[in-house]
Length: 616
Image (cartoon, rainbow, N blue to C red; front, side):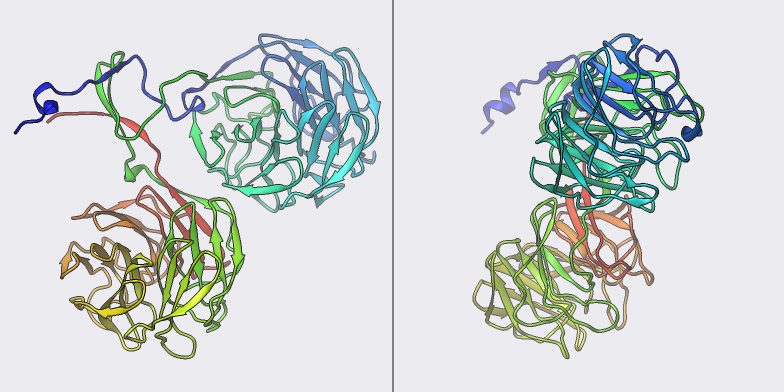
């Protein structure tokens, strides 16, 4: 019988523009009013796009001999001269809600003149010297908040020592507060509120991508930006902000702009001109920002204004609509081929041949592993909440190369190796590990799939094995053996629908792939890149990805599986094998691995995007 939908069809919404993930996703940069004179590495900027102040800096390089004390005010369309700083300087920090209530703090003076912590407040007419910071700071560093409740963070203790130090300002005095987690200079600091600041990127011995949020009492490491940079601009605050421009290292000047939604960074429309050392709008928003002056290879007076819509039609995965402007039917999808890997905070304990297939990109668990160098099994367990790794209670039995499956609050760790292959199994309840019934076979380097109460263990070695066992939460049962032996292989899916890919057979191909339907194993299309220690996996039996491994040297190759074929997609940032994976084909994680420093974490994300529906 036909359904109503088959007879009558269904409604399709008509839109003049494509749907968007956020207001910032629909934003763009446009030319604003030119500065009266070039400003390079300003001492500080404050305010918003429509009420901005840029003070001090230099008329051109080198900044330490071309310093100026001038300031300029912006009203949203043009710049006018403001009052002069009492102390000329460059590369400090500024904060404040507007160009009539701002603070310029610290900075670098000319050679032979000691850099200090001089602080000056601005009332829209004149600067007034007030209480010095407790810590003298050089180079560019972060500032956020209002003229009566602000914070500065990072920079350098003259002449070269990196700072993690932070101080808060109450309108008349400075008080030292909690340090950043990562000491750095030349970072972007943003936030219109003292309790919602963000420290973005910067420079240590190279450009970094680290991001930390401030809640008024502590700093928390969150997802890194996609492109490392220093001397960048920024606007907004937690949980919605922008970072733009700067210098990549190694690499050129950047025009890239990224938007933060409280959990991840997304690349949005670029600046028209790549540059660094510019004025910014730390109290602006992700919908309204400013970037002025700086260095494009030579000093510039150009200003760019960022504008994004506050009202937009939200993207919803799977929606179909008609775009009346482009005269096309569109669908909102999450194409795996468009995914990318980005660095995330390191695990706490360096390790490889780690078990980490329990959970998702935002809630993962790793346990056991080998601590380099040599054979040094570890019982350490760490839990991932989407932004940080936390050390939690250890396994009862120290070992490496366990088969793992489940979630980060309900997991199983089976087998592994200490001085020999093991059959011990432990169950994790989110707090503690408990020993449960042993598996039927003692094996290391096996694979795992499924849940804590409906799991599957595959293959392994000591000796090499094609065995498979199922677990019901209490007991293990021997199941149909695979067609070939597999160890150090990828395994993902469920107890009744799983994929085993690659691995280390004593003979045969490490590109071999088998699919399990709950009854039997079937050999299917091989991997494009044969590999062992291909333990980075995520997804279900008809929609998954496999990443990393050794082929025979470390590979960054990532491949997606659609149930019938493998397709090469974007690579890991760092080639390595024997790490811990988990998640889905659209959102995955890879942690640890067999390449120094053995602590790296990368996140795979696939953006929701609109594509035209074509009919052939």
